[in-house]
Amino acid sequence: MSQLHPRPFVPFMVAASGIGTFSLMDAAMKDLALSMGAYNAVMWRNTLGALLMGVLFIGTRQKWPSAHLLKIHLWRSIVVSVMAIGFFWSLTKLPLAEAIGLSFIAPVIALYLAAVMLGETIGKEAIWASLAGLGGVVIIMAGRLSGHYTTGHLWGAAAVLFSAVVFAYNLILARQQAQVAGPIEIAFFQNLFVAATLSLVAPWFLRPIALSDVPMIGGAATLAIVSLLLLSWAYARAEAQILIPVEYTAFVWAAFFGWLFFAEPVTLPVLMGTALIVCGSLIAARAKPVPVNQVEIAAV
Image 1 (cartoon, rainbow, N blue to C red):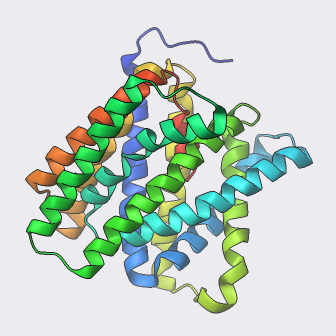
Image 2: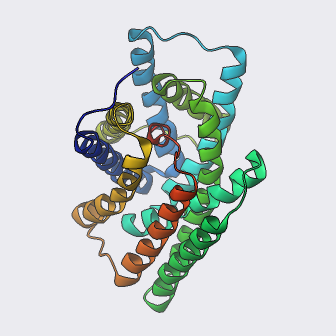
């Protein structure tokens, strides 16, 4: 087992790089979702991801999981399939920064799901976190409704919030999964089972991959794996509570990549709303000081 790094700043920066890499993958997936649809983008990325992680799984001589573990991997992959389609579809309707900002409500929702599913007590921190997170969502949506918007924007926001609810449930599953499996095993079977789950509707939705899309799909799959490895290294060498704030650097990356690749501006309501949601999530993190390892998130 890895020891804590003597300088926590080092794993913190490595984790920030991992989040940046994952945010770049989000930008690549937005480009793919715009060109081939969210279903095909997720399907092809996970298919290639399963091949790449399969090589890593075999190369590192991972132990084959039991039937019970395979059932856990399969169920979480089904949940991730729904979540990923919803989120990446929303990216075709909303700016990257706005979608990421709204998605930060997930840890707050997870507090209540943990109370229902794990029997945890809902304390005053959860209530304050909920109020802050809800206020942030209201500000972002009010900013969207007061400016130029279309029905597609509203459906996109709804898709993000739906994805956040599913993602919150995914966090609960990840807590259980991370106790019995390592990151390489989780990433391999998640990519494999997500592709297998989505293949059930392939006769109706799957389109042949265009040659021009191959580099972007390969890039997205590679970026997801690199992010996984960076975050895995960081979380093995620093306490989780030290790395809690690193997830929220995703907004900065999303704003930058959205501006760089899609010329997306970041409005004041999005900044203010995201700040409130982040405050709520940090309060939620204090209520639950040992959050889900970000490695599990990166596997998405």
